[in-house]
Image: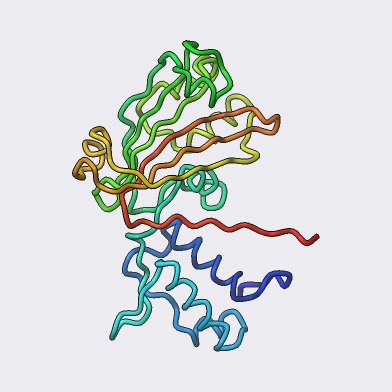
Length: 248
């Protein structure tokens, strides 16, 4: 069955999103060939010029590259997934990570909230919170490290948050199953920074190396924070966001 276009959006952007999602989800992996312009044109029923624009856009985003003798090849090494990306990936694809990525949970424990974490979660300073620390690997190499905090009350109803074993449906899927609280919106912040001693240890890079640092808040339908997270990515990896501007 041929794919269908949603006419309100420019056709080339719909097709770009289709292939971008396949790349980010791992359906198209590093080194896989992207369909040619002619194949895209025929499959989607668009002009060659539109298909060419699709490939050009994906190339501009660093997700594919032209390789002599092979055509346009998927290039995932420069693609990065933020915690927010992962939160929504499981809804779209049923997977948190693409096939060439995996995460190792380093610690999962109850700790006392310092001022920063307390403010982010909306809890009292020194109250109990759950802390989960992880390192994410791509093709066996560490590419990001992150820490997530959750209100301590979740320890009773969602005890697996205190285990280092992988939660197959993801933390948000698990919390939704055990509490009924689901993600409604998120907020992310990013800043360029230099690797700390801990970053250097987690990511196998020299201390002081350039990194992208981020933090994110995940909210339920009542505007209550489900998770506050902080993460660091190695340099040279792009994060992609799309924003729709409503008509006035």
